[in-house]
Amino acid sequence: MKRGGGWFRFAFLAPAMGLYGLLFLYPVAQAFFMSLFNWSGLSDNREYVGLKNFQDLAKDKIFVGAIQHNLIIFVGCGIAVLLIAIVVAHLLQGNGRLTKALRASYLLPHMVSMVIVAVMWRFIFNPTLGPVTIIAKALGVKDPPAWLGDTKTALLCVMVAFIWYGFCFYSMLFAAGIKGIPEEIYEAADLDGVRPWQRFRQITWPLLWSIKRMTLTHVAIATMNMFALVQLMTAGGPNRSSEVMLTYLYETGFSNSDFGYATALATVNLVVVLAVAGVINFIYRRNPSGGRDS
Amino acid sequence: MKLTRATLTWLFLAIVILPFVWIVFNSFKPGNEIISHPWSLPKSPNFANYVNAWTKSEFSKYFVNSLVTVIMTLAILIPISAMASYVLAKFPFRGSKLILSGFSAGMIVPQFLAIVPLFMLAQMLHLYNTQLGLILIYVAFSLPFTVFVLFGFFQILPDELIESASVDGASHAQTFWRVMLPLAKPGLLVALIFNIIGLWNEYSLALVLISDTDKYTMPVGMGRIMMTQQYQGDWGALFAGMVIVMVPLMIVYFVFREKIQQTMVAGAVKG
Image (cartoon, rainbow over all chains, first blue to last red; front, side, top):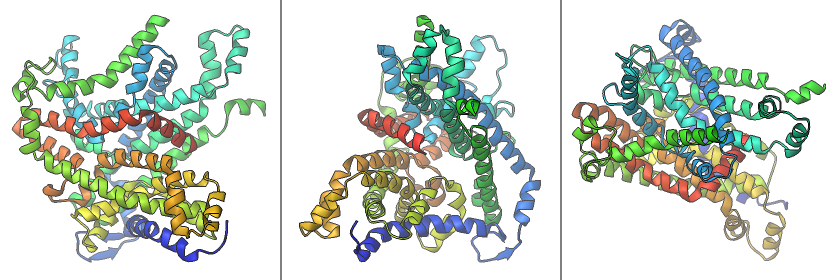
């Protein structure tokens, strides 16, 4: 490309870089800095406390509970999504009218706002008129729990809502992954007389390793950064039984104006996200068939 | 085998569709009918809920706020992202790779990492609780994805086009606006669709940066109505409100379904 045009380069880059730097990169960088201070309210009163906020977080029962809830949500949703997505991905492969209807609509949940998902599922889990309660009663459960209002079930309900929102997207990835497996492998297996279930166990499932990695990484990021769904379904309750990192961050930052503590929490949140994503990518670091060769 | 396949397909179709159908049905029922017959078809469809949602619950205000915010964000975001990604793709210089990774890094950084400092910064700059502030912050937060997408599209356009335009005496800016930008239309469309979906649904930033209920966007207004409605019992308006929020997205989805699916797959596989 021809040289010159320095002024044009600057003029074209400046608006995007300026806004991004000021309103994104600068606050991100500040988050790390602010986490070292005791900073409350809107006053300029701030006191350098070093790593005290982080030490307090480690001792904070609510926060430790919140991380545990995030991890439970991740593991539960991760497993459920893998199982559901592989089934739906197979269903999407056909060309019948029913398959086409599914293919036309299955991404709908992923289009709507988390707010809608939350409001919708609040109604579905409503203890008096919600379908879940009505079905439970019809099935003979005498005293169904209050679902979102019960410490034992609240977290589970949030997970169900998240799975409903997410499974379609991951099904799409799996469907694309299955399409990407070369036909010849299946043909060779057919010649060897491999039965369908074996075919799935030994070919399809292992060859989808990179899709599984992608899916689990994506679910990890989404569940560790869950906010709107929990806030609007349970607000972290009852009795903090569904509290997650970001609902607690919102509370400390914007209800209690404890800014230093909230940014320390945000930093820990980032570390947890990176750690979980790192573990997933380590587990799925290479192609299992390539591993067998070497 | 065939039977189970059909059954499963029906099952998943039902799981996807039924909650939406249920919302639409209930949006046509009076509040007491929702409570007495939450499952049935509306006895006589009435539009009172929609009128209530639009007037009493002030959905119209939220709707207009959202519409203005999304349109203004896009009006700033798309041109400045296109300009930046054009330079990064076609006129690389020392440090341009670094700038590109700086933008891309924004896609992995969780929004909430920035949210508390952003809240304070917005107050300092007098952008807190203003629509302009929300718009500018939306632009900043949408830049990583948008630059990433448009960079890819500009990169595959042949360099010869720029050379021949410059031989014809066009300035860099003219080449960009008249030749390259029209050719990048497929990329612009992808950026537009995904930003519309993301911005129309955005909740956390709007919740934190807007305090005045008159300035709420749809998702935040929706959340507020749900919280307050609990005590008033007018659920019909809430259901109608949900339909109002969803309709624009349903339209975008059904018009661009193929493109959305292709891009989502491509994006996930690359990323």
